Image (cartoon, rainbow, N blue to C red; front, side, top):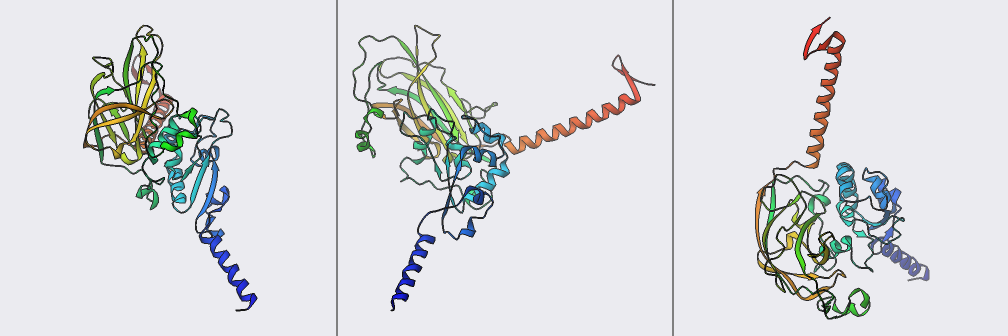
Length: 381
C-alpha cells in the first residue's frame, strides 16, 4: 500500500478506537436533553453535580445535607424514571456538593436509584453510613452489581410488588466484643494487604483498660433501601412502618457472650437492593443520661443472606473487622402480602382528599350565601 493508504488506515483505526473503545465525556446539558447520541460515542459518560441531580429529580436546590432518601420520596417519580432511562444507555457519575467542606459523603442510595454507575465518595476517612452502604453493596461482587431489569428496559423501577420478601432474624448472642480500650483489628480477607498502606484507618492491637465501668449492650437493626418498600418490626404484619428497631433486651448473662433472645422481621419489596445494618450500642449503667455509643456494626445486602444459623463478623468504628467478634443469629425466609400503599398511591389519595375538601368548601360557601347557621341548624332568610 502507498504511504497515503497506510496513513488513512491508521487514521481510521484511531477513529474506531475513539468511538468504540474509550470513554468519551458528554456535557450534562446534552445528556439531560438526550443529545448524547449525536456525539457518536459507543459508551459516553457524563458528570453531574449533586445539586443539579436534585433539581432534575424535581427537588429544590439541596443544602450540604439535603439530598437524602426522604428527599427522593418527596420528589417526582416520573423524573426519577426518566433519569433511569437515560442511564440505561450511558454512564453517569455524580460528584458531591461543593459545600461539603468537612468531607461528609452524599447519600449514594439517591444516586443508585436513578441508575448512576459512579458515585464519588470519600473513603479515606472513618466510614460514615454512605461508605458502609457502598462496601455492603459491592462486597464480593468484583466491583459490579447488575441493575434491576425494570430500571434498564424503561418500565421504571421500583414497580409495585404484590408480595414482600420476609427475612426473620433471631438475635441470639454476641461473642468477643472488645472491652473498653481494647482493639483487635483483623487484617485477613481479600483486602488484607491494603491495611499496610493506611494503618491509621485500621488501628493496632491494644489491651483493654485496667479499670472498666459496667455497661449495657443493645442491638440496633435498620434497613436502607435503594428503592421499594421496607420495614423492620418485631411482628410479621406491623401496623406502623419503621425502618429501624433497637432491642428492648439489654443482653442477659453479660460478660463476653451476652444473650439477646429477640426476633425481628425484615420486609423488603426489593431485597437485593436493600442493605441491612446491625449495630451494637453500649451505654454506661452508672450514667444513664449519656447517649448510647456505637461500638461495632456490620452491613450486608438483605437478599444475599442465607437461611440457617449464621454469624455476622462485626466491624469496629474504623470499618475494620474485629478479630473473633461475631453476632450469632438464626435466619429464616418467607413471603408476606404487600398490604401497604405505595408512595404514588398515597399521593393520589392525598389529591383525592384535597379535591373532595375543595368541593365541600365550595358547597358550604354557596349555602352561606343563601342563609345563616344558627345553633347547629340552617335557617333560610
